[in-house]
Image (cartoon, rainbow, N blue to C red; front, side):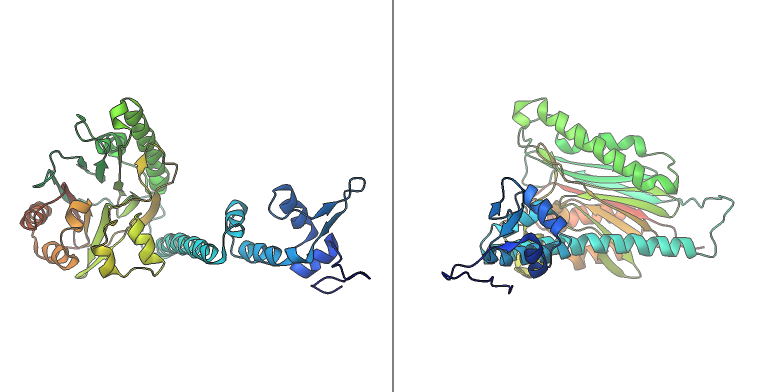
Length: 371
């Protein structure tokens, strides 16, 4: 029987058995039975006595699409969404899914690179001796020149640095950002390097719960939430937590690199090739978040493990800083400031020179250079 289906004497396209349909579609009979149970690809007829399934050849196009999407690793729930969309909308959904796969793959590659370097270093001391760093750091936050209140919060301790940009709680005594950072503060202690990711991930869940409780405690906080970007250090290694559009930057060898990925509408459009970086910078929806800690959030934050080099300088900032100052200005200040305190003071002053339309928060941390 061909892929178009055999015809009976009256010219009616005959149904395909499950075996014939499996062969024509590239799906297994076992998979077809599963997709039937899930309502993703039900047969056109099931014999009430034998349970024997038969399919219409017209279903082959949907079946082949399912097979291709499974080949991409797409979850079945999302496949159902794609299959029910018009072709152009389906293409957009596949593009969006693949961008997320690429982002996740890049994060895993980063972790794998770190682990390879970490495990192959010749100077690892198997006896368990741990190299501690005397990090130098400074933090600053202020209301800016336009906002009536400061909804940002920052923290800089010996092992923990964090920036959170709260929203939706104007007129409330404490913003959601404070609740998130308070949940992280117990981490500012000695954490073994092997436990960095686990400890910060657990604290991230605590921050989410704290923000949920904060919102639930007062009807006026219904639209509140916060971004959160944090670093937890142990020796020359640190775990990086990120959700929202606050950022972490690394200055190394004179090159400034953004080491977090914005969870915003415009960043997703840039990822999909629909906007250039220049267009994104002035887009009217550039502050629209796709991920944050808020009342309805169940998205896991990004978590990475990184290794610092001697002489590295790190910047955490809310968008009241990096959305106002061009990257070359950030780099110039970070390159030329003698101390972290000078860096945060100059960055804040520059933001004020540019009108400071939003709250301004930043943390700068230095890894000591080799003596």
